[in-house]
Image 1 (spheres, rainbow, N blue to C red):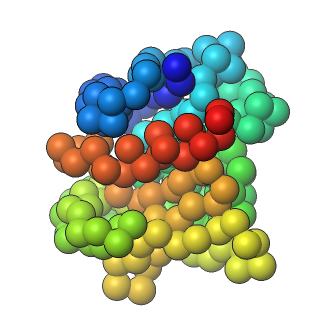
Image 2 (spheres, one colour):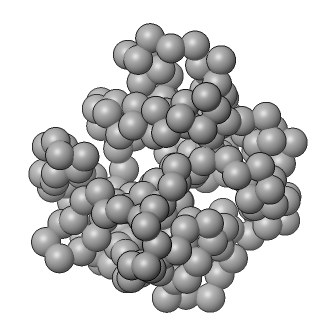
Length: 195
């Protein structure tokens, strides 16, 4: 059985929890979704989801609690949405603590402020999907020499989803839809790590 931890620091935590449970049920696998807040809890996870929120605050808490060290030392796959995308990068356009496990540079609030939030049809993983964008970041750049990086989705010219190894960073909020496909994709990545 695998354990997917939903980092419960800020953002749409309950929505991620609910859709992760639904994804697990749809996949028919032995897995559990749990809420995690501390490094020792994260250490017991096979994968971690970092939701949206204020990336500076989440980054500070991750550092203060040693969660970043646990994720890095144990090579735990991470799925970051919105602020989670910012945190996964090694660089952003704002001075803040980062998890820095993906060779990407992220532009915060690339699509505007809260009042500029929108929904848009996108294509991800070769399928149509509804993207919910709330103060969404986008990818500024990524290390094109890394063979384990692949762009998963773009909106116009902006990269909105990228994967490196088993880590996935997306700019939008799949937890605010009823569509479990992206969460299922992450869970498959976690399963590939534990096999």
